[in-house]
Length: 91
Image (cartoon, rainbow, N blue to C red):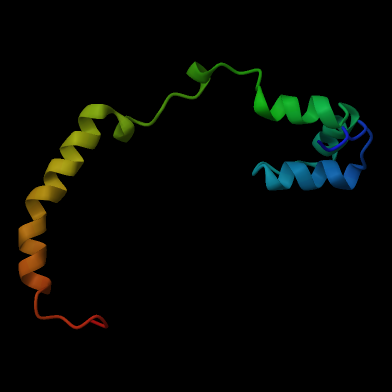
């Protein structure tokens, strides 16, 4: 097993983690994130303070909408196959 790394890190490492996590950050946000320390910073990304209800899923992700979209695609498939039957891979 690898030894546990220490909690120290640089501001540049904090900025890199925020960037790689997909959020990025302003200089002030990066400094505040850096001051948390490596472990608390990572934990803050993995366990956000906001509840999941704070970010409702879009309507198109509902079970009913997904089923309706799939039914529509399934019904369009024979027509698509017929229209693309004589096409070359480039076409």
